[in-house]
Image 1 (spheres, rainbow, N blue to C red):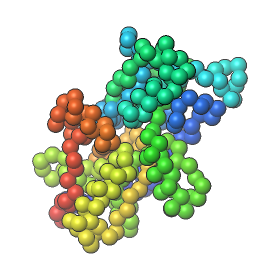
Image 2 (cartoon, rainbow, N blue to C red):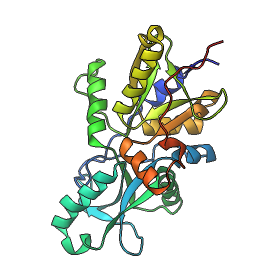
Image 3 (cartoon, rainbow, N blue to C red):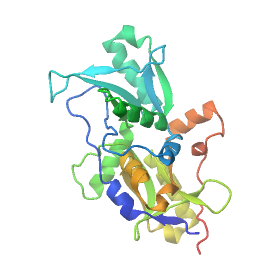
Length: 276
């Protein structure tokens, strides 16, 4: 069993399809939607179940729908529900934005956790009902900045990363990806991290364990939507080896609810599996 899997061709295409944010809507600090990808399969939903997202609800559990002017059509305002990758970002949006704009409403709201799979299903249901509300996934701006910096360093000067960045350790020469064990046995998986720092930490451990191979590694940034599209449509069996690792903040949140229950909350081992 090798300690890496080759997925360069598949994810090279998917990762380059960055979704552009909605122009003219200034209420949320990062935007993207799922309209460009196919409907989810059970395997996609299962993988997304491990990642928490956070939204705002009223005491009845109803989502907060924000209405803003549409620069492309002034007569048709845009209705939007935000889902945040970071719980802190959701709380800041409530405290720093909504409490200033509408303190009476904000006082009745709370940050509610859901899974990324729940968000995915909500978008799917909205399509069936022809819902005019846009369900927006908001990335962590620090990670968007890291992704943008990586793009600029790789020759794409001035390009802004639009989407939800994921960071994956890979080998430079053959576009194969570093793998880790998640359970007992020989089966290994490809970790995709929501934080660049997590990917770097794993890569540093791998470099210490296998210096010779570690010299041929780097971090690649891809878009979450492209990864989900690949999960949903690719015929490459290695795609099923992808595992999404939540941010450290989200891992701590998961542990606070159910200690040691979620595989995504466990620290991955960096030691490579023996090669054939």
